[in-house]
Image 1 (cartoon, rainbow, N blue to C red):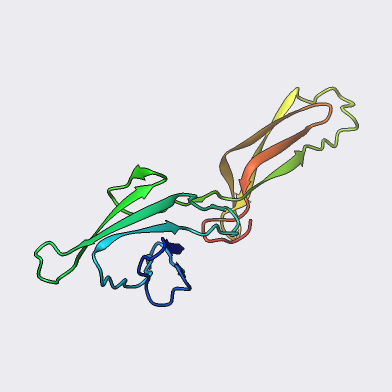
Image 2: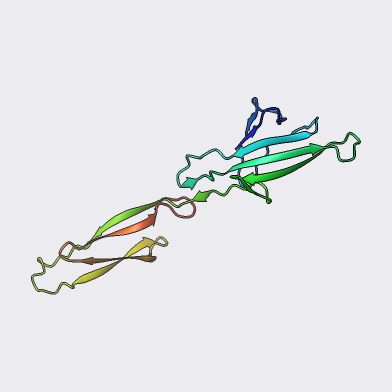
Length: 174
């Protein structure tokens, strides 16, 4: 995540010029650090999420603009900072919230039904066949995969299972 301050905007410790980059997760959140305001004024910042190269992830391309108004409402030397946010130019009263998308990687798998019947010598082959996809559900049994049935017809007797997840919910490959 990157915080970029407009010219003259105070920045948190660890910034390089007007830019501070940090790592964050949904669980840990994002913390750019404290910004010390010494003067009243209006300060503008942009917050962006850096694109990821992780497979299956689409990073939110939004740009947030944070406007911080610093003033001394009691004229007593105590500054008060109030932030407001815009997402891609529209008001964002809830603040900054990036929404990333994870798409399960999928693959296709071709299947071919092979008949061992002397090239239909007895004329008993059906017009079509339904082939359910099955996977091992424990050490000794098979279970049908819901929604994964391929209909094949002769003379090719071939079909394709489509949109199969590459791994299970724990990341184990199928």
